[in-house]
Length: 430
Image 1 (cartoon, rainbow, N blue to C red):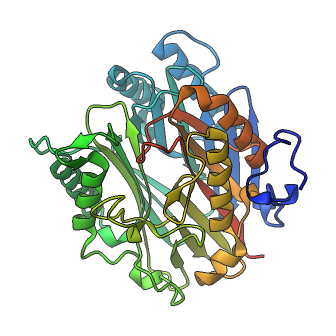
Image 2 (image 1 turned 120 degrees about the horizontal axis):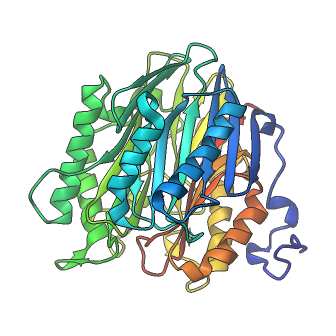
Image 3 (image 1 turned 90 degrees about the vertical axis):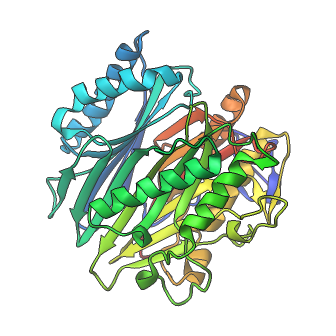
């Protein structure tokens, strides 16, 4: 079967070219552009405008020079879209762990009173720069949007009868050195932060768990296994989004999540929680028919299986937001294309296509809200080996088109996995 000219020789799965980037009748709600190291999407969702951007510095040699260059490009987008003061959530990817504190000072100086909830992730940008930035904003000039900035790690946004809590850069406080104890303590700190703002743990919809040496040994097991053990124990009595899950969803509900390696010194967590009194809001934890549910993995992968959904879809009115969890080249529970970054990238995107499809959204009680790769508005791509960056980027650009993307060097939970991709997609009822 024919394939796009960007990769005519590569045909895993026997797909026709038309299946790679299906055009969607709903993409008018997303406007995407990219150039010179910055990409951004503008999404009109119900009565609220969202801006999603990624930036890699184009100029500068020092951390301060590169940080200001990247920030200025994001500022230019915000100004162009008339959404000043709108950035509520930010992830900063750093080449050196020693740059976290000076970067924090730079951010405070740049944003002032408009500081977003910011996580600092020790993952080197694949482009070789000292940092890269991913930012998410909500336009205060539209509808009933209110933004409450409660410090450099906490921001609450309220609009459309919804409240979103962004918590960033949560660290453990225990003196224990075990991954299990430090993970459990960080989750407890997350719980404290959620409750302090009037939210509850069952309202968590998305988490990021950054673990140094994620595949390393921990006693007679592995560090990722111990993180999963802590997450399982913490989640045991939490029924996530229970009042909003459609009856078609019969499996246990968990948040969307990414657990990924870093070069840092300690585990770091971030999360988003959502609260609403609206009775028309649906929240569906999505599973992928191509993959075994992570929480059903056999013990050969982890004695306590990972507790997360492959994705999480939120329907409000005629629009849906889908958080795509960290996704890799796995079908069933087996890794595909071992040693082949090109094949793994292709299979990973195929998995995301299936996750977002109308067939899959319908089986989760959300008919009419299926999406395609054209509906993806923000992407992170984790690449284990720097030398694979070029081919991974080529495939992502071929299949995703112009979408704000961060490419970072990071270890992945299985030793044979070379690529992991996460993102956010938006759709409108077809």
